Length: 190
Image 1: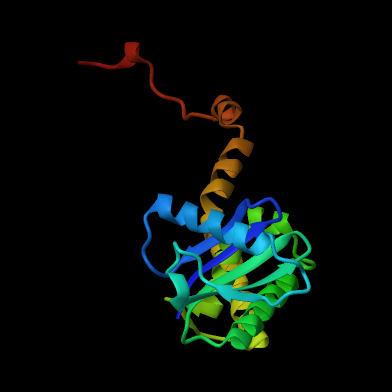
Image 2: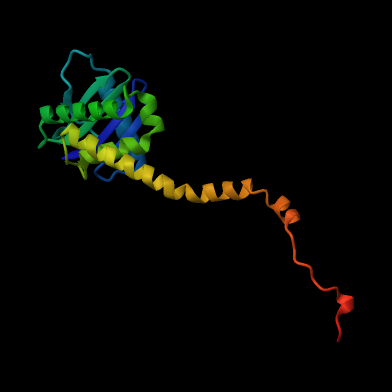
């Protein structure tokens, strides 16, 4: 089972963190720091698997990671997960991000965090792998984008209505309004 998915840059700044097991906030920060120190000091030509740190669960847990340009993609898993399977999952995640953002970079993870979390939710939910077929994931993302666009039309309706009212120039319309002739008060009999 996947316990945590972390993405951080070369300086250790977290760009994405998703924990599938409860840890208090301060413990999560310590796990991120410890994982960064374990992964960042390794050479690029060594194995991408290592035993889990003391905070994430010790020797029963594994850290599986890939380093792409300025980002580390790290999956913390228990001993039941296949290392090669998780490496493949990381590859699918990165390729999916790359297709969605057209050459994904660190800024995409910062400014589109909701979309990144949605993509990740299509791959992994509750620590279990849901989907590894990239075309299926892309199809679901495109469906979500269509839904968001159709909802944008509905949610934008109040703003369009306010804009239309502002364009009507109501004070001038009131001045131009023709009222029917009313009898004068002097001609009324009581």
